[in-house]
Length: 463
Ligand code: PA5
Image (cartoon, rainbow, N blue to C red; front, side, top):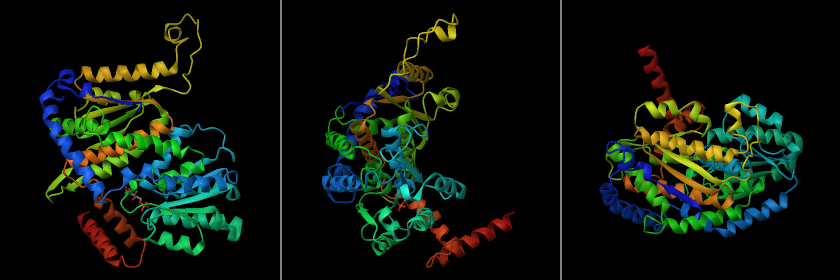
């Protein structure tokens, strides 16, 4: 598999003992890594978590491909309504495999665009509706819980918009991806006769990109989901190996764990040098933040742990963030994501302007410049004692993207075990959701509405 991980610049030898990891710490960490591997294995074997199985669900992949083939050509837009784990994976895939937003090719029935409605900003939703034609739109509504307020409200608006143009036929243009046995979305889908796809209960939202949540929109816009899952399956096999050389996810987890917990790097900057990987940086941000930001550990002790993920784009953010990274607090670890072979190298025409700033660039390529800037930034950070590591993907295609997504999900799972926390729940997200139900008058949530009212009263008295 063409994905390399180089952690040399996390070492004390490169960035000094105050910020880098020593060989003996790494050696001692091997036992922690072995334990984490066994821990994740046990969670999978007991059925508690299911994301490692996703790339092997070939029946599901075949069913999705069959449906995509049936409806192909009947739409020029796929409108995905979902949020968090029900939207970010599809966005990451779309950016990586069909071109970065907003510079994708001209859309058509042969190259449908993906419009992702993952917010309830009324001007965003209105603009999106104005940009789509109902008769040429296929709607995918994705919500594992089947009860998310943002998804439900936007879906009702889009459904009405579709029905106004198509009448009863609207139902045949809606696909629901949700849990089979819980939530109200499945109830509505059955009542109205939507096409449905399901995801397993033991796959959390942020680990669901390779389930129908990510694969349905991906297939509908023409991505090769068989190659995507094949790449992820190959990576999965590597993620079960117990030697750190082969198991890149485990090695990366150990390195990140050590530099975080022993050297206090509580922020991780995910730094892709590729616009195609930019969507994936936002997907990663959710994965890392929600999985590893926890109040208590598995023993019930209050630990308030977490590493804040930041998404930065190379080279763009060299001109907005790197000043801080070079001279600000040394509290971060930087993880660069590079690409070896770009589809188009971006040849720069030879120039004889007689001007220094232009002539040395002529005849070279943008790919070379991009990678030179990445290497230069890693060298500069290393020179100032800032620990950094680099993933390099041989190329950004379906197989490598599938593998990289799976690698990062495994890394997150391993790190959760190293921290002795449950990386698969998200209690912290729930309270805000519950207050929203109360505030919006949902039946059964009156107590939360009252709690919120008490909070406002306290605020008023404190002014
Ligand atoms: O990772 C998670 O579980 C969450 O971020 C969910 O993906 C998010 O809250 C959306 O949930 P749902 O798919 O139920 O609408």
